[in-house]
Length: 103
Image (cartoon, rainbow, N blue to C red; front, side, top):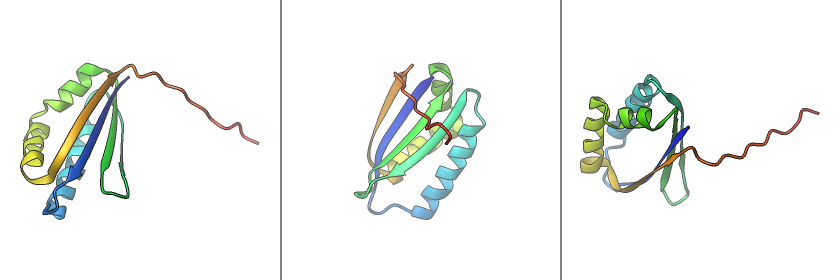
């Protein structure tokens, strides 16, 4: 598994409707990519966003990163949406899992 963590803050003057439409389109497109496993996004009380995507391997994540439509929106994000962001990638993350037994 390959994990991508996208930590970001939006600009104060963001066009929220445009951002939401672009984000929905990118999620839809990402889910259709070979090697896509999951995507979730969380917003903290102070407005910071953590988006997590899981991919089968690094190649699948790189292919998504360089997808033409995604590349276009990445540029738009730097220009119009994000105040700042950091992208973290982890190959074969150490994983612990727990499921409560059924009573």
